[in-house]
Image (cartoon, rainbow, N blue to C red; front, side):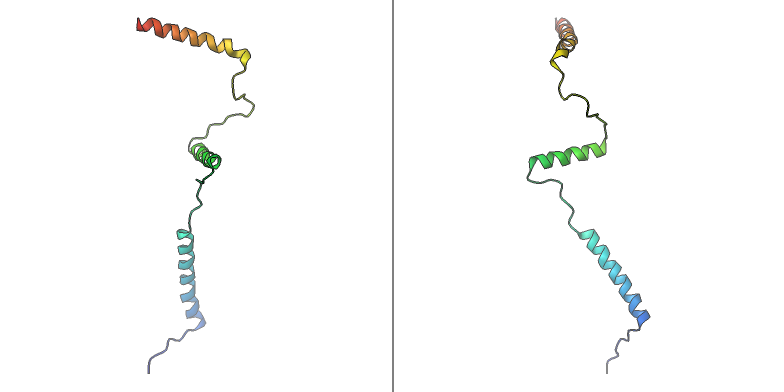
Length: 92
């Protein structure tokens, strides 16, 4: 005659609780991670930029124009021409 394991309510809880916790931990740690990269290039670029912003956040107000207005072109050209002239003189 083989001895049978007698499960009392207290012993059952002591056995079931650690098993449930281990199973839950295994489920959480082995679950597949959400993939940020996808086949869509727009989504891939957005997720890449979001990761870079998480590493080094740089606030950029949305009121700034994306390109310099044509009316400010002479203001940008003057220092550029001066820097080019200085570089040309330095090479001679």
